[in-house]
Amino acid sequence: QDSKHLLQTCTRPLRLSHTFFWSATPTFSNGVGDGGIKDGDHNTDLPLEDRQDDAIGPLLLSPEGLRGLQKAGELTTQEVHALLNSGLPPSQYTYILMEWVGLYVVEGLESGLLIEWILYWMQHCGKLDPTS
Image 1 (cartoon, rainbow, N blue to C red):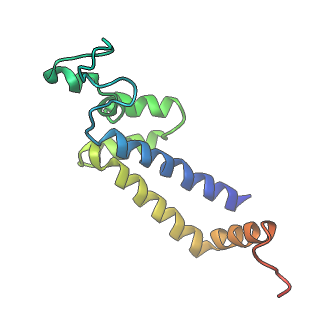
Image 2 (cartoon, rainbow, N blue to C red):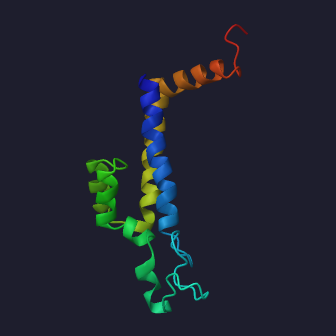
Image 3 (cartoon, rainbow, N blue to C red):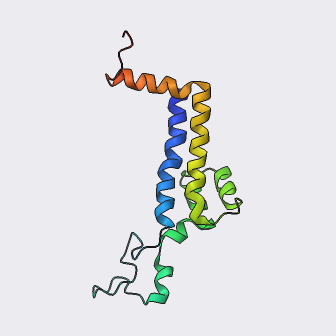
């Protein structure tokens, strides 16, 4: 049970780091609309100077966005506080989350929880025969 909790603790920030990476990556699309590219469909055909206002990524990485992720259960209060007080720009939040995952993995290896889970998984997937 503890090893399952460790894996859940690792997978949540890993998924979120992927979201944060793409949120910080400038694109011509905001992932929802067409980001203001004039294509004649009249769907957010914004002038170039207004494209940033149409992007969802910077909003997600803003203090308000992080608090929204906290309310949705994707970040803890302590994680939001740590990100906002890191002194790093929001584009670096993805790497902070990956660093946390690395620390969780090291703790899991040192405590034996991660090895316990790997062995359990391998036995149940037929990849490891404990009698050999």
